[in-house]
Image 1 (cartoon, rainbow, N blue to C red):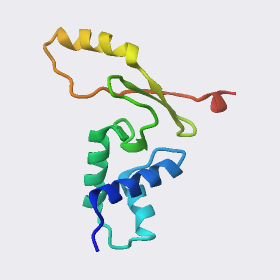
Image 2: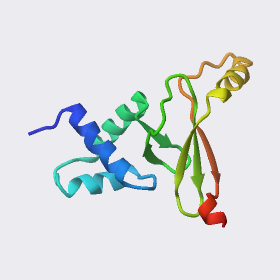
Image 3: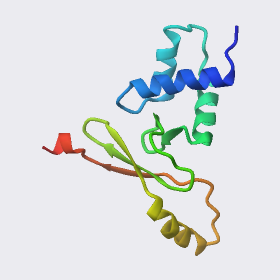
Image 4: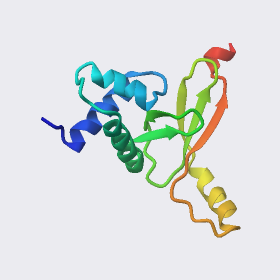
Length: 128
């Protein structure tokens, strides 16, 4: 029996929340196949697309991986700090960045649909 979109989204969010590090779509697929061997890659990709569109998950473009959203971003900018050493991702609210980003893009009449800022570096555990 096929799962509903809501059930599928809940499954994928649960997988993302149980992992400390970002996961690729295929890593998520492997996790789900343990209990659901017939699940196919397009199902995972469609569900991840829906979750990112809803703001319930973030796609880290620079490393082609996903993390669950841990903040409320109704009118803000998620700022994702990605540790190059251990892979940990901390999420911050970048609300005060939104006016500056709009000012930058307005110069070229660019209309943004979503904002995500990725910062690469090293977390406090890895620097110490």
